[in-house]
Image (cartoon, rainbow, N blue to C red):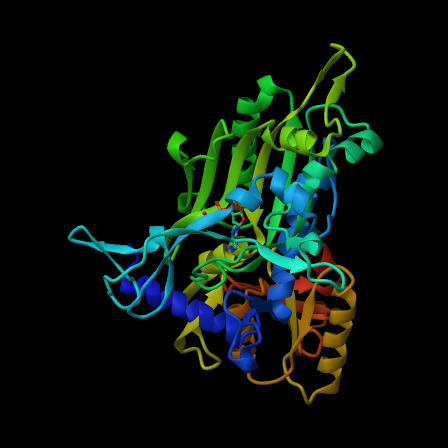
Amino acid sequence: MSTPTDAQRMEKIVSLCKRRGFIFQSSEIYGGLNGAWDYGPLGVELKRNLKNYWWRVMVHERDDVVGMDGAILTHPAVLKASGHVEGFSDPMVDCRTCKAHLRADQLVEKKGVKQCPNCGGKDLTEARQFNLMFETHVGASAEESSIAYLRPETAQSIFVQFKNILEMSRKKLPFGIAQIGKAFRNEINPRNFTFRSREFEQMELEYFCRPEQGMDLLEYWKEERLKFYENIGIASAKLHVLNVPDAERAFYSKGTYDIEYEFPFGRQELEGVAYRTDYDLSQHQKASGKSLEYFDEETREKFVPHVVEPSAGVDRTVLAMICEAYAEDEAPNDKGQMESRVVLRLHPRMAPIKCAIFPLLKNKEPLVAKAKEVVALLRPQMTVFYDETGAIGRRYRRQDEIGTPFGVTVDFETLGERDPALRDTVTLRDRDSMQQERVAIKDLAGRLVSRVV
Ligand code: ATP
């Protein structure tokens, strides 16, 4: 259960995200579109850092994975074969009192009686299935034959392109196909900020294997994915692995783990790692009439590969990173008095801006010129931000709040005015420890790059 402090913490996080340009309500000036979010200048950087790192670890650093980027508009036959047209639905209940549409599993129960979580009303309709897919029409006519869907997951285009990719890449089992992209679900109740949205991004890997490798690979990918979260700054103590019980797993899955994170609004799924057997490829093979078999040259066997799927949400992971990073502590102001500060302790690799550069005073031309030299030196290697306005403490504070891990100040020592030995050195401040040290400008890039890439 989340406590009032958790709710307050979440409110502060949402407000910081808006104030500092991480995440805005979509179409906000028109009252907002429920379940859709826009990422602002800092949010888009954070999101890209996450996606790039996932791609690096899951594709570039491996010999056994290739990538693809499929279309969002999907042929209805694909989603019929996958079972989505028939079965991708949630049970929905309407509250006759406040007219809310509710997911049946989110009703509250008091003394054995189901109630509307919004108004407490007990006059509820029977549950009926509500398909979560967004339907659209392709071309000028709006006939049945022109129906297409916005994909509800990226996985299906991977299965449908399996044969093409197998043939061109000449990969041997086990091997994977990775994809990052948008997915759409008409969720009955979008909520908890970006956690449950109607438009979101997924990072999915379909890792194809021989049937007898499935269960071991399920374990392997669960462990790999847990390491990934630790490498982007999510404490292992806040991650939990749920071994999804038989009754709650998809009927074709022989094993599924949910990797959950302790969000301020409760422990919730970040990623699913599922052993999906040969269900998807077999379904598409049956429905399309095209062989999706693999020929093993050594054993001379032909069979439909099995698959293990780690499927992560970009938006949920961004939200988890922000929740994990958000902290309030105390820092000295320019007069040395302690003040409360908000700090996002983002992993340097994920931080939208890696290094902020400040001339001590904006009206001293040599300081400004030197600071701009430092900007030019670091910019080719990392995202930097130049700021000359306000007291230096205030400038640090602004960067702490958006998670910038390093701050460089160009002062009179840098100009060699006091001690020639300090010429061309700057102070390098660490966001978390607030420690400052003197570093030669020529050593800066070398010091920082290994920590932020
Ligand atoms: P949930 O039970 O929370 O609805 P799910 O089990 O349906 O999620 P999957 O179909 O396994 O989710 O999708 C894989 C991942 O895609 C999820 O772990 C999550 O990170 C992300 N995801 C799914 N639905 C949403 C959504 N509505 N908003 C944001 N991310 C989502």
